[in-house]
Image (cartoon, rainbow, N blue to C red; front, side, top):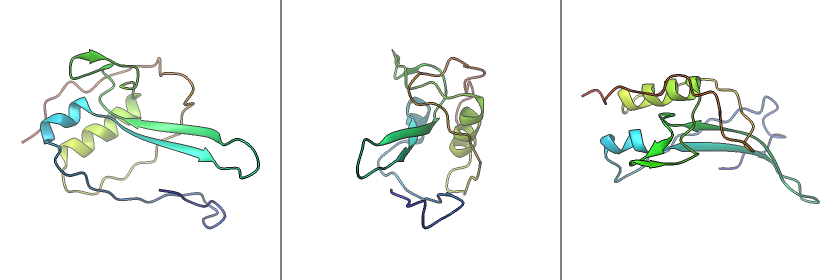
Length: 115
């Protein structure tokens, strides 16, 4: 997905997507990352920030990983998406610096998936 900020002065991005062959039980072990870049044709591209949607528990399928580091707002959105399949979920999340892992693990999702 690429959004040209010149076309949308508010720099909003609205995107829908569907993943197939992923079981609902796997979602607590997966992460979805959105990275926002400043694309420059004449010099290097710059990472403006990112959002990671996951449980924030620091591990995936029993193995430690630094990318399962969602902060409280990101965890909350991920939990809402998991617990409301096939429903539109809308949130506004701040971009965070993508150069370092989050150190503000607040409350990782502890619940099981709702039926």
